[in-house]
Length: 505
Image (cartoon, rainbow, N blue to C red; front, top):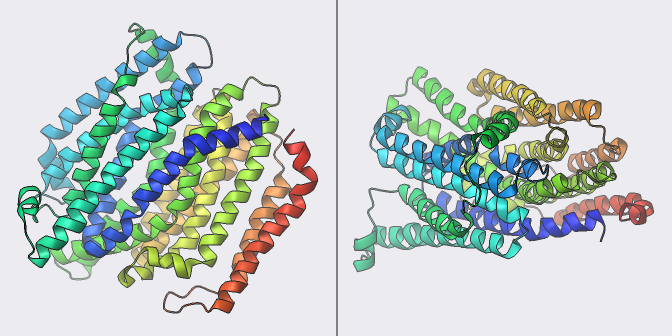
C-alpha cells in the first residue's frame, strides 16, 4: 500500500469520528438559534471562544511533543507518556481549583455577575478536556481506531442527548405549561443557556472516565524528560494560542468594541450589552456554517500528524508531503464551491431569518479556512525539523494582523471586519510558512497546480449567481451552479489523470 493510500485510510479511520462527531454537535446550532435569542446565543459564542483558548493553554503543546518524542527513540515511550500525563494532570488540577476560587471575580469581569457557576463549569470542562487530550493522542499513536472513535461518538452522543433533553424537551414543555415530575426534578428555567454548558460538562466527565484505562503511569517520573519536552513544546504553545486568538478573539473584541460604541451612541448599559451580544450571536451562528471546512481540516490533522512524524525518516517523505497537499487543496476548494454555490440551501441550517443578515461573511470565512487548511499542512515542516520557533514567529504575525484589523475596522464595519481580518490573517500565515519552509525544509510542492485550482475556484464563484438571502434560486439556477461545480471536477480529472499512476506509486 502506498503512503498516500495509507494516509487516506488513517484520515478515514481517525478523522471520520471527529468529522461526524463535530457535525452532530454542529447540528445543535439550529436548536440554539430557535430556542435562544441573539443575545443569549452571543453568550454561548463568547464562552466557547474562551474554552478553545484555555484548552490550548492547558495542553501547552505537549500533544505534539508526545508525537515527536515517541519517534526519536531518545527516551523510553512509557517514560515519555507517563511524564506527559503527570504534567497535564498537575497543571489542569491547579487550574480547576484556581478558577473555582475566583469564579465570582471572573464572572464580574465578563459581565455575567449573576452566573459565576458558568465559570466553575467551564473550568472543569477545560481541565478535563486538556487531560483527556493526552490519552486520546496515545490512541492515535497506537492506532486504536475503534476505541478512539467509540469514545468520541459517546462523548458527542451524551452532549447532544442532554441538549435535546434540557433545551428541547424540558424548556419547551415548561414554557407551554406542560410540567411533569421529570421537568420539576431536572429543569430550572433560571439556568437558561447554562444547560448547554451543563450538557458539555457531563459529556466531558464521561469521556474522562472512559479514557481512564489509558491513563497509566508505567514509566517513572523524570523531570529531565518533561524539561526536554517543554523546550520543544513551548513554541507550539504559542502557535496553539495564536491559532485560538486568530480563530476566536474576533468574537470577544466584537462584543467589547460594539458594547462601547453603543454606549457612546446613547444606549444604557443593558441595551448596549444586548445589542453587542446580538451582533456577536449573528456572527457566531454564521461562522458555524464554515465549520464544515474546519471539520475536514481537523480530520486531516488527526491523521497526518502521527503519520508524517512516523514517515519523516523515509527518503520519499517530502514527495509524499507535496502529493498530499495537492489532493488536500482540491478537496478544500470543492467544499468552498459546494457551500457558496448552494448557500441558499445552507442558510436553512440557521433556521431563523433574524440571523441571515450575517450570511455575507460566509464566503469570506470559507476562503479564510482554505488558507488555514493549507497553512496546517505546510506547518509540518517546522515540527519535523525541530524548528518550532518559526511556528511562533508566523503565528505572531497572524495575531498582530487579527488585532490590528479588528480594532481598526469593527467600529465601522462590525462583524464584516472580523471576517476580513480572519482572511488576511490566515492568508499571511500561509504565505509566510511557505516561504520559510522552502528555505529551511524544502518540499517539492507543485505551486502552479495549487494556484490553478484556487484560481479556478474563485473564477467559478465569481461567475455564479450572486447570493441574496431574501430570494430563492430556481431549479434552472441550481442546475447552473451544479454545472459550475462539475466543471471544477472535470478540470481536476483532466489535470490529474496523466499523473495519477505516478502519484500513487
